[in-house]
Length: 277
Image 1 (cartoon, rainbow, N blue to C red):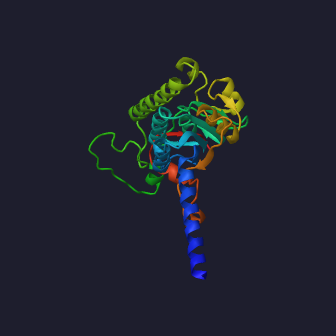
Image 2: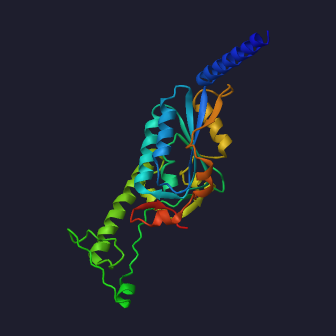
Image 3: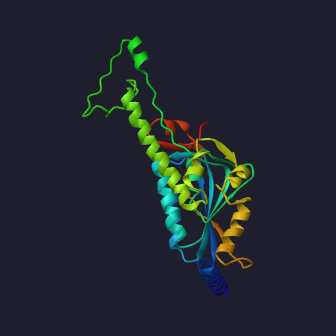
């Protein structure tokens, strides 16, 4: 008798699990995808965007941005992924503490951008650093030679100073990347490039200032962004599950891995959409 009861309970548990699983799978959802910290490793974010795009039960996506920016290539990868996503379903951005430079760049393709009144955003621009230790090496009597295939192969190596020609080359490259930034903003925001250039000089804005400049659409928090996503998906006033898509991390990794390691950002000679610290 006890065995039959045990089997019956086990069957009920399995049935409830199966019903719950399929109910969850079929229920309409709003996915929240966080983008936190310096933008460098973009594969996890893009993977979550692709999951949201392919899952028919996810009706809209909220990108929760809290980032001062990062590497140009990484920001452009996420920008392109969000562009593709918005062709399939509505995308709303919710800006947290900071969504500046590359953090603003990845926000641009969204259907609607929310910022808190005090969110720090803007910082539209490009930066690259060259640190020269040539004079220090000379004083120490240390000579480092770069064996290179061309005159500019070691242009950002720290053991020599930039020539005027090399500085000009870098300025031309930075200007091209900067213009790409402006073009990608103008593609989705109601502002032309010439107007944008008047204040796209690296300065930062509050969310309220950014709204007046048409860099963001509305003022509000993550809850407002989720409500907007439901509205755009035709789910206003209807039940919908709010799920969070993010990289799963082990406890050890959370304990020992720094979320914002500035040395990782500044070690390599790259172009950055990065707000000054």
